[in-house]
Image (tube, rainbow, N blue to C red; front, side, top):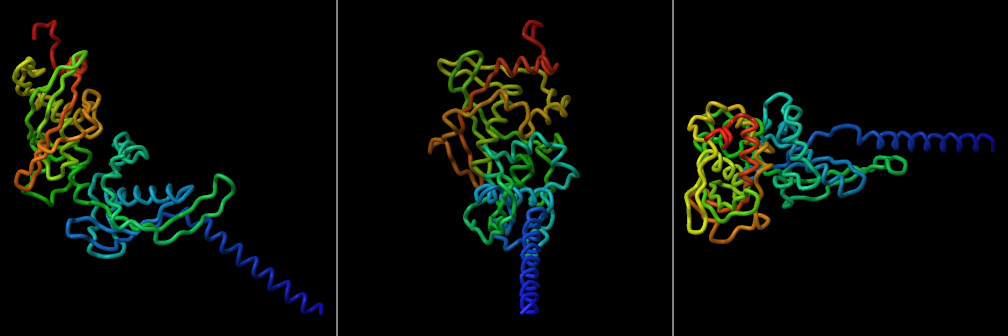
Length: 321
């Protein structure tokens, strides 16, 4: 009888050890970075990935998986799984994520971060889940999620639309930091109205293969137009001379304006999209392989002038400019 009890005790202890071992393994699973796996490549250049995300609940874990998918396409490339996935990262600059920290903090923000524009829910599904053990608020859950990353659109976004169309395989520079000769400001502007406190309403016509990117580019184009081009008078609205009368200013101050117009740059302080970015049907035109998009924006011309004066880019009106 004692022998039977002893054997039974050993079995229980063994089971408990196995249980603790499994719990320990599960508790560690969220501490390791599981490399995203390529499942396939679509004809439009998008990639379907299996990604592991960890969070306090299912929604947090899925959102984290989407961020990891976009981040790896940007900075690491996809090397695991289907070999058809491009193993090269879109941004090859060393420490780019840290160097442009302010930009990427906004890009990956939970509230309105642009990363969400480049993760399609078309293939999204939960593939598996593993709970990481913990106590109270520290309890986390890890999910394996299937997502599709719109790689081509992400590439255009990071290149900021300035890459020459004739070289589609260019190496994407980081966060719109381009050489001056690669910038091609292709837009048209026309006045719509005058707001309060030195603000103008302007319709900006921008060109892009992606209409979403054209809307974002319209903000830069509007500010660029106010600084360097101005616009003519129409009935009821006076014309606006450019803020600078130096035709070489952009070239002479190339570094300043590269930073000023970088994604998330200072230009954003002076421009807002009107009507929540709504675009009328007649303002969305297909021109060849591109879209011509008309967007109405509000530009704080007075604030923009003051900022450029303080930076020494233009002379003040009091100086006789």
